[in-house]
Image 1: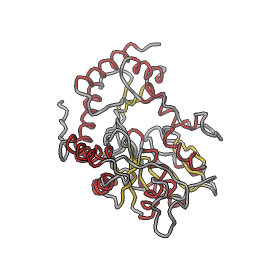
Image 2: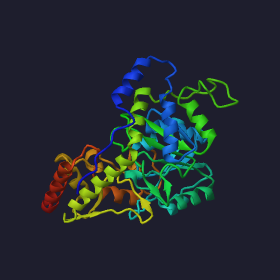
Image 3: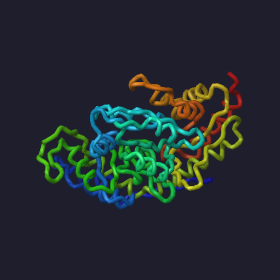
Image 4: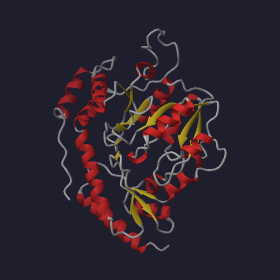
Length: 369
């Protein structure tokens, strides 16, 4: 299998950057981020896009725009990273952790329903590893309980389910542009929304409320400085031109690695659902080996980067950072205990992938301790 090559952007990045630097310093920030927003909205089929400094900042702005504040409860999958939950703490809101179905990786809506209270205001599905839950089930649940939907689609650029793009199902969808994401700019993020009021709020929120929504006074509320710097917006624009090719390369890389691991003992590839066009953000394999988390950690030490082994990913409801109540989310714990999610970048060649496969196969065959 030959991995697809990647095209260049609209013009050499060095030329664009030189022109941009020649215009700096510009206290207004210049038009680069605004151009990026127009192009993101067109590329993702959303009426509005708002560029910010990180995926976390996108969640922070979106949640604020949905009216989430002190004492409000928000349903969040335990199957996520700390960065999903951090904006809730900043807003004074309370995360209520919901379990996941180990078979589908989607939210356990029965568990979510048990955890709805009069203070519940929103639900935050997380498309971890680029995998997207059932949008019909999500919107039906949110409608039944009167909840805003803020999608954490940080890893899901390019994923669709039932023809719907990840990040376009709810009130707002939030993405990261950090290095390692399929669409990247080094650091950065953006949110998508069909609602002009959310977009206006997010734009004011990212810039200390200096340019407020219509009808409000400048600096009439405390907000943040989370603007996307113009040079990073330029990088994002160049990579946005290559988005289809970047997604296809990641899919080809994942197919290549999973094919090379078909005979590895104790590993089974996790296929997406029939209606899901997965961006293949990370090759996913279920481990039936003894002490599977220890095996993932062992692979990380041998140079095979993965979510649980390299970053010690555990369910958020098990972290001491957050308040705990009720039973632990055992489905999320099962997923992370038995999942090998290999971390890729666009620079990983067939040689790199074959080396990963050789190490994983060899160590799986020898794994008896």
